[in-house]
Image 1 (tube, rainbow, N blue to C red):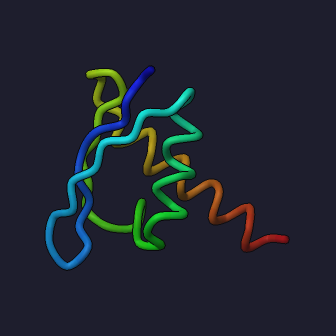
Image 2 (cartoon, rainbow, N blue to C red):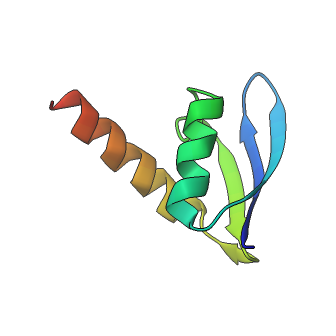
Length: 69
């Protein structure tokens, strides 16, 4: 199964490794885990490919959509 691996800043670097069927599912799991995810410094890979910028964009888009409801 593909893995999202990396770290995000939450009063210090917090490492993570999540197996998920899709990048979107992994990111949603991280958002549920910690509300700061996607809003702080972070670096991550999806199956070895850097997806940091893509995840920042995903999180920003989802939060904007939720605010406009």
